[in-house]
Length: 290
Picture: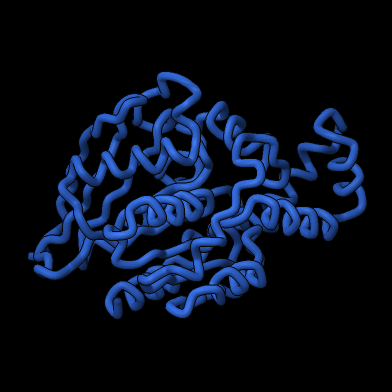
């Protein structure tokens, strides 16, 4: 009989409340199999949409957690929880709670910026970085988003330019998301689960009202300056139609001598759900070779 992975859940304390976490362990772990830690995006969208990546637990432990204030983690005690520095500290506390001294760090979207910031603060922990459809520079993200908005149908462009009060704004926003966030219709269960646990206050405080409008406290943040100094292998993943634009991802990756880039044809920001087999294969190949 085939053995199944084992699942453990728990709460790790931080100064802003407890983080919910899940550790999925392989049935017969190799002694040298370094765990992978999944950092979700948002900010404020819990880790459910990354749950399909728990499949990596056939070879190594997978740690997935909800950032403070969303999903199954505690509500944030105050607004100081929603900063880059606070999220870095929360992750460090989680890894100490779990006794993890070395891990592969996977960051998706905003989680990519968090991964880079965490590695700057704790460079000894990462065995590798996996930067998936990553936010690296807020200004570059918005410049890329503006280019994508400019390619929308004229009615959608006009509605977005007119602002959220325009009667066609919601339709235009949905078209942007269909083209660049997720092209599966209706949206798959992992995304819907994340949406049900989303904290809009966290998203608005750090980011803004939608993927192409940035008004929060991440304004001006840029982690690209740390890429050239990376001393660990780093894998960059994105979709050809992703809001994390392939040209931008390739440019950031080229700053590191230890980088590898994988662009998935026709993929969006949710390419791990659209092309799960190819995505997991790319991750497994990279992790095995590190």
